[in-house]
Length: 367
Image 1: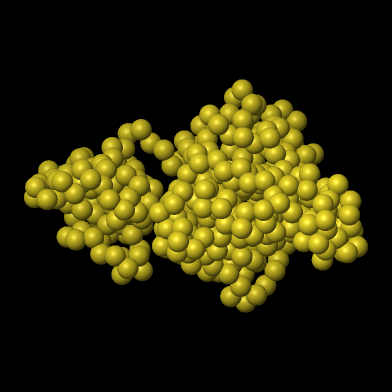
Image 2: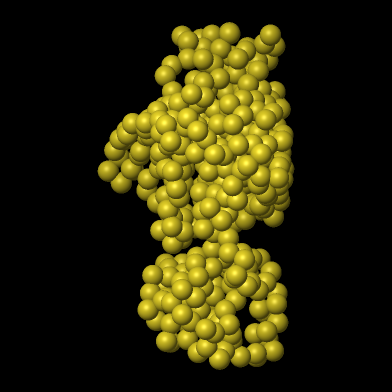
């Protein structure tokens, strides 16, 4: 039953044909998990809390930083330095104290994802990496949960819904792109308003599914480009040979893949160095060659002292510019593309010692 405060708060929804009292009660009884409290998860959480979703779980392990505020509108300047999950919980409860917010301040992986996801009806993927997307898709299929997919890059974004019995994310994308070709907002940038548009689409889909009204995006991929303000759709067909939802699945709850390896972002052969250790070596004037593989736009915002600039795309062709007798330290924004540069050089036959700056310049500037 809805309280007097809920009847007043949700009045504009309740009077909608298709929602009504029963629909609002369904929203109140729904449980939605948001994975990622960034550009997508932040506005998505605001809309879900405002509309009266009964329980909202939020998974994130990061802290709020100044460069988040351009698009992560659930945070304010006063939240900088706080854990995202706690900050967003506090702010959502200021917006609507009638909902239950459950923060999960963890890095989501196969060790904890099953125990978290099983408690929710709908899982909203607001992450920015393929490894987590494939993992969430597989777990949602195997647990018969609805999976809301959304992604953004630059001036564009896309969204879809994957439900029981229909095509899944793997039907649309059986394998991830090679890491060096994977879209990355940290490298390519994004407009905050695009995050809001795609998050609003995701929130609309969740509200419709929870209230049992309208037709969802299941079986369709919606693509948005704000540069020319076009909205396009593509049909997603079920793949009978899909490794998780097909006729003879090879992925089970007891046999989940190593998603980091599957998506090519983990390599045990790559040695790393922490920001503090690198700073100590530089202060001691140890012989190092620092290779910065960031984009020119990123470098214009922060220049690493005495670094040689080589793009990821040309690193293998320019291997002769490196001295194999001197340790090379590779840096990028978050430590992922620099790892790809090391892999490319190894493949090209470079024999010198190479180290990857762990977690990239984000960790360097923090320390």
